[in-house]
Image (tube, rainbow, N blue to C red; front, side, top):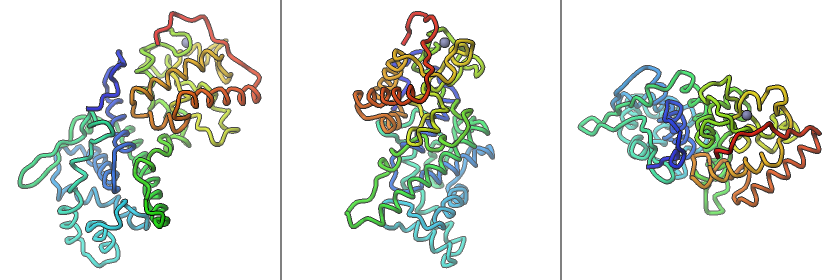
Length: 348
Ligand SMILES: [Zn+2]
């Protein structure tokens, strides 16, 4: 079992965690074909319809609708050169295989591997299952409460993120096949290691609240800057703060300031109150604290560790160099520095 909450006392499981596990499956699950994305999108539609059980023949059209759209765009849908099912999908699109035959092929071929490996993450199975397999003459999926309880906003965000990830991976596969004279094609891990937060990059700051569970587990209910207890469930009392201010991003096109390495949870006073941090650069001790936090998440094999290392460096030394060079750049750009307020005793 993968349990990224281990060692994080005070982390309370919630629907938000289930959403995080769904995202982890889409982002980190190993894959040699895009079936996991098609299944994820099918599950979200079935959840929206409130279905609690679905047989494979019933699942088939939900699964093939997004997949056919991707096959039609001509991008590769797997690392293997071909599969019976994908060839059938292509044949169906050009009218060589009728709807009934394609449906039968889907039921027979498409779900052979994806159902069994769907919940598998690097390091173990997802702690949350979104369906269970009913074995029998007619295999069926029983959709779990974790899936059915996702809110409409969760479903919408997860669907958009799945689609964005799918685009990225099939692009990598297609590029890889163009250079296969080199004898290898990119693995899913290489493709997915690119930038976990891609879907967030061009979104508003509001959607950063999706990262709250990852941040609150470490901070144990206290402000990152002053250690004052703060209600982490309240968006008003507890702000998602960019350590390096968001506006700096306009001058740093290659640095993703919206990614988790740069985000902390802060009380309202530290974030935006009088004498608060606002768009200033926080003092060196806060950067050291941020560095410790990021290393902790990486060492504890948090689902976001790949993104953290990709964004800031794979060794502690490289990550510290990254933070201090950014600090130098930021201070050159903005004269203001924030030294913080009186601090409560440290809790992390
Ligand atoms: Zn504070």
